[in-house]
Image 1: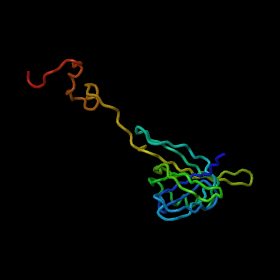
Image 2 (image 1 turned 90 degrees about the vertical axis):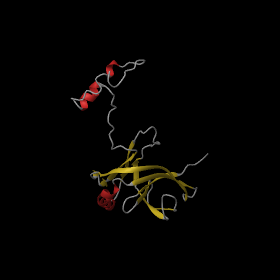
Image 3 (image 1 turned 60 degrees about the horizontal axis):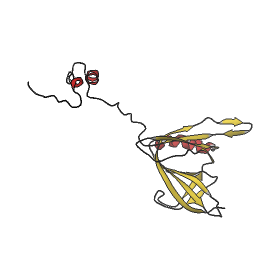
Image 4 (image 1 turned 120 degrees about the vertical axis):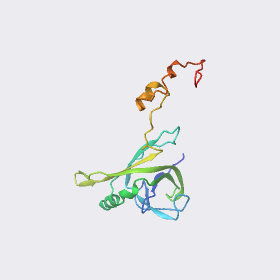
Amino acid sequence: MAIYRESIVARIDCDPPALLWSGYGPLPLPADTVIPSPTIALGGAELVSVPDFQQLINGTAERLDFTLSGVSEETMRLALEDAPSVKGARVDIGTVQFDEAWQVESVEWEAVFEARSLKISRPTKQGDQVTRSITLTIVQGDTTRARAKNAFFTDADQRRRSPTDAIFSHVAGINAGTSRRFGPK
């Protein structure tokens, strides 16, 4: 029976770059195409929400929320300080494969996103336990740009844009198979 040992890793290209993985404690990662030099990924405590993502198809933009729960007060402070540099930063998401001894075997980078916002939740208290969480919203594709509605060469559309322009007033009389001579009669 095959045993799959893998975790999620995320690199946020802010100032300074942040490298998190979905396990506990520090994780040394080798240099590759995304990570310029060997570095240590910080344990993101518990990634409560790691949504499935898909490739960008037919221009459909994707918006995902990653939630880190159980972060320390120091991590919350750092997140608040670094929040302005996170917006618009490149976010690389990948998987880390481990061998039988839980040593890093390989890192495969699967998708590139853009960080849109970083939100810090209020600490919630359950008994003596205080839980803090951070939510990073990432997007793939252009989610900020609104496209204009399709415009047609009709008199009504042109009058909506410019009430006195009658350039398309004869369009309604043109059918498939007919032609209209332009110019002087």
